[in-house]
Length: 306
Image 1: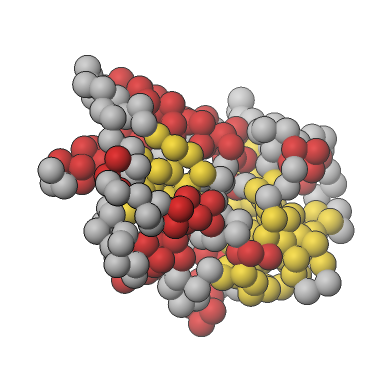
Image 2: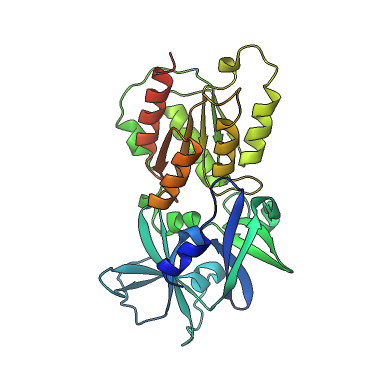
């Protein structure tokens, strides 16, 4: 599937739906958000790179772009896996990076609600640092949605959130402004909270998905001073139960919460996603792992509320 073919299935903003591309590794079904997929191509010769992570095959140049190839079977199974002539490369784009992942087959695309995706328990996910971000019911099949950001962060830690960006901000005063954050990745959730705390924002409350955060906001409807409970919301886009676009739409279309600043902080911010977020009323949008820039945006949005 080429990128131009994918445009016909882009979803309307804020519907809480996802297009899942299903693929197989050793006949096991896995999934990736179509919004992260640029294209699918036949596998090609790969140039090995010295001292690379065991799951990194090397690089190849399909046109004018040099891409890193991740051997997904090797990564998931922890051992070399025979490479077949019919293997495919899924070319992805997230965190402003293009990366190719080797898979065995591509099955198709299913459109489902985020409510049809359940957070795996630690047994399935592999503990707190597991690579399964959700289990999706696609027709009659259960599909494991992989956390591709986690995979890349493990292979190349320098591509994820860097605490050094916070350190470069220098000394900062303690800030009590209550901030709500929706982030389903346990790894990134901890990194975001630690970074915000280190930057002075100590009153941060984390939620594992958009639904949990929205339920909390609804519980605040009868409180007297809303500012004492929430001053700003940060949300990922991809999350089980309720995605960040749906959460943004609910907040911005609700009379009580419409003035609440919402920042979308996601690996998926590209031109199309930025347009969707803007349509829904997001105050700011930026891509992971720009944590230093996130703090600057929080500073600005809270300052203009005063």
